[in-house]
Image 1: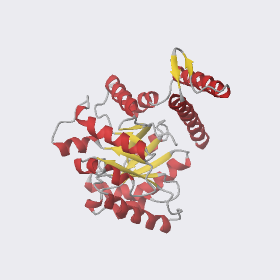
Image 2: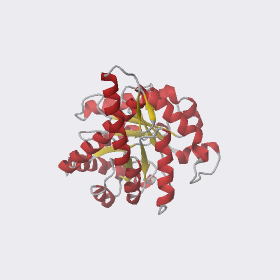
Image 3: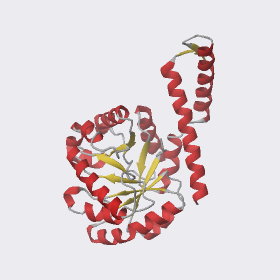
Length: 298
């Protein structure tokens, strides 16, 4: 599993912001062709996005591009501009059915073949951001083998429900649970939506910590100052890792002695708990490896 703790939106039409993104330690840079780009700037953003992908990926950064939704009629042109060597993933907004995924999958494959990318290479991340998408989330998750994660679009989801989007996020309880359950069922990463209030580190950390506690593996962010706190929330602490190592060591010793359970720190440890401990250690190692690769690329 490639770590995607933080996914930073960067408007593709803002060259200065793209350059600054090189210095920001987000796991993924998401070059945006959709909401962050006004209609009059869409074409300019398209012209710049390929060079931005090449620059960022050449520096060892993982790069995604958020394209415009199928209903806009802009998706094909967005994909033609974005897809090329160095692009890791595509964020696909306003998905409402498996048919949307199948349609964009065909368009992606077409551009992969035209632009020198092995077909199937580019990962797809559908955004779940409407009531209809929630009801069809499982169908959406199964609609393409290139899907690697499911993402929450909280602002559009709240708008679709006709309720305010709050910092506390009570309006997102159901959709968050659906996304993490479907993602777990189909071995995908669940990625939480943005925390829109800027300069509120305590609120951001609380929101990210809650998302991690229910199964999200990362979170989209909209400002460089949000990257550090969210990275920290989604990174296992030394205390967590030390506890996990004790669990794995004690459990392996118990198994070698013919026992199926063992006590560690006053708690009974069995296979599911040992499995979670191993996964935590593996995830921490993946984060360390990813950071090392990024530093070498830069």
